[in-house]
Image (cartoon, rainbow, N blue to C red; front, side, top):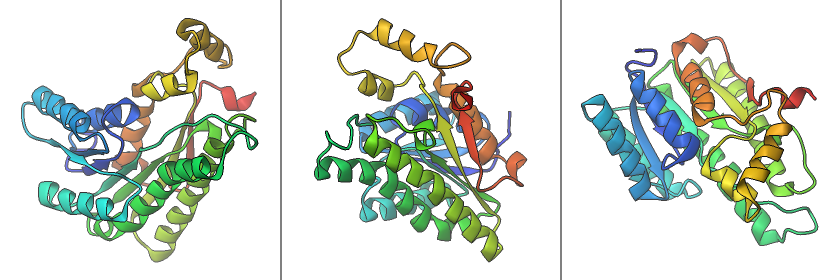
Length: 257
């Protein structure tokens, strides 16, 4: 306990899935957390459950469309008002859309890039001034193993998550060049049991689809949200002070095949 005591974190896409698990993990280990999501009620619900568990107000929900500049400015202002600063940014908001280069139209392509990549660009850019005031600080960008490994049916998702991977390195090198104690790393999960996996599954039989996905993983099983949340905790903590521009594969070995 206390691995991130005193840290002030903003987690996007925190109404469910990896965002909710990451926010809960950070709060359990001592951080204050602002949970943002376009689903405000969902984010507030997770924040309420955290506060109930912790016995005090350490989490807050806030509506944010992470693709909008104005919403980012409002979220950062909220972090200042609620937590008097920001030392950890978790860019988790994202979506999956299946489709090959033949299947997707330009509007669909743009939508995936906005949600998965523009949101990370805006978060890193607009949060940097506040992060500089709370050094040591950490930016944690949720990419995907699909940002490192391609699939013919995930053209936009592959491209958007690969962009997050290299954008992370660019931000990390900028911070290092400037002499700021701000780390920036990316996390690359494979199949994790979250609502996003349901989106990927579509209307196919759940049990059969999950079994088929698990067979692709050398460890023989799917991951859980806390498998990713523990990596977020490590990267948010000062235990990772010498780690930046790195990619953390949480993939059960699938990328080694």
